[in-house]
Image 1 (cartoon, rainbow, N blue to C red):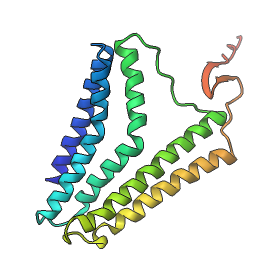
Image 2: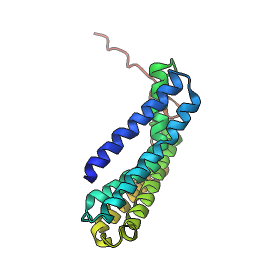
Image 3: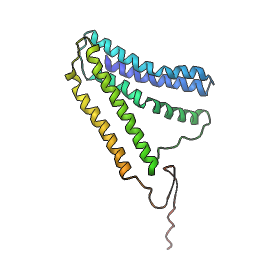
Image 4: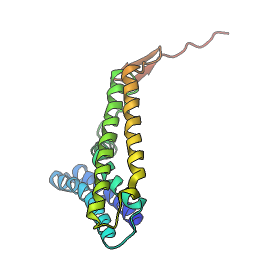
Length: 198
C-alpha cells in the first residue's frame, strides 16, 4: 500500500507543478499559480500522514515506510531547485523565455554548484532521518528504531560523500581545457583545431 501511495504522491507532485506553471505562463493566473505551488508541500505532508496512519492501523513497519519519509525529506531538500528547473524549462518551451543555462562545469562556479548540491543532500538527509525517527513515537509502538537502522547509515553516507566531493572541488577546482572559452563556468566556445594540410 505504501509503495502505491509513494507513486501516487510523485505523480500528484508533478501534476500540481505542471498545473501551477500552466496557470502562470499560459493563462497568466499568477495568484492561482502561487496557490498551486504552495500545495506542493501538502502532497509531501499527506504522504507522511498516511504513512503514520498506516503504522497506527497495525501495518508492520518496513523499509517502505522509511522510503515514504525519505520522499518527503527529498522533496524539502531538492523541491525548490526542481521547481526552479521546471520553471525555467517551461518558460523557455511554452512562453518564449531564454534557453535554460546548463550547470557550470569549471572554475569557482562549479565549486559553488557542488556545495549547493551537497547542502541540498545534507538538508534532505537531516529531514528524512528526523521524519523516520518520529515514525517510532507517532506509530503508537508499531515501529521500532531497529527497523529503520539501515537508513541512518545510507543517508549519512550519502551526505558525507556529497560533502567530500564538494570539498575536493574546493581543494582541486576543475579548470577548463586549453582552447575552451568559459564564461561563468560554462563553455561558450571551443577552439577549432586547424585541419591538416596534405
